[in-house]
Amino acid sequence: MGREIKQRNLALVEAVLSVLGVAALGLSGWYDWGDYDYAAVSLLVVGVILVGANPIMAGYVKVQSEATAARLDERGEALACLVDLTHAIFDTDKMPKSAQLRVTLLEVDDQWDPSVLNQRARCENSGRREPSKHGMTEHQGVAGETCRRKESLVVDVQVEQFHDAMLKMGFSPDEAKAFDPRAQYLCTPIMDSVGRVIAVLSLDSKEPGVFDKELDIQRAERITPFFSRFLTADKEGQ
Image (cartoon, rainbow, N blue to C red; front, top):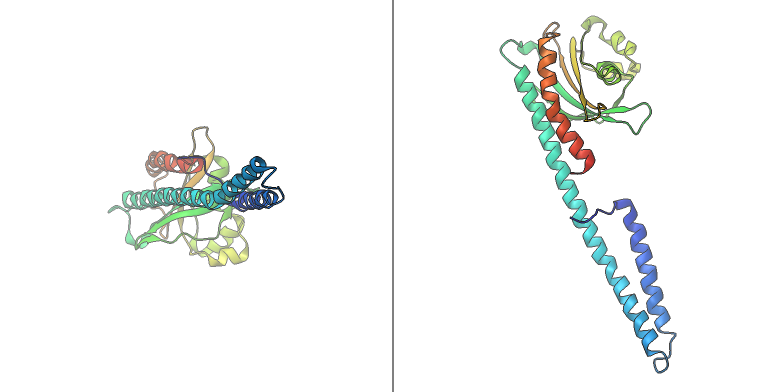
């Protein structure tokens, strides 16, 4: 398919086409048809073409935008399915139901300083959940530390001191109060082909000691390349 024109440039393109078209049509009226047939007809044709190009261009961009949206929706669904699969892999008979295992994919937005981690997909025992619209920076939480250090981490948190622990992890008092207390986190960085952290796979539990610091990290790290493939294709627009 042709090169996509960004939506924010469409208004400018339409305005230029409209002005040029109207100008060409207007100027053609200044010519005496008897003396300047060629010039008048030429300007008239140019004006018609330019004005006609406006809706054609709009239709082309609409098709391109719809195709891009459909492609991104497909990738988003694929990422959500991978999160669901990750939950199923870890939610075995050894995982107590009281742990209320939760798996979250957080994508890194490095256009900000510090970088922001936004939830892309989430799965709990009850099934797929809508990701939170509130992001966190790379200086907050276990996921943020994983992003900065570029290594997998398992962190235990005393539930009775959860609020204070979140404050120490960089969250504001209001943010810390809004969190559902968790007792253990396992976070694994998702890298692109050049070693940049593009996302974090986060698993957490209400029960302590459910994640093995060696075996479960290995399991999570074997899954991350699949996430990387979809995330990098998303950014490259493939």
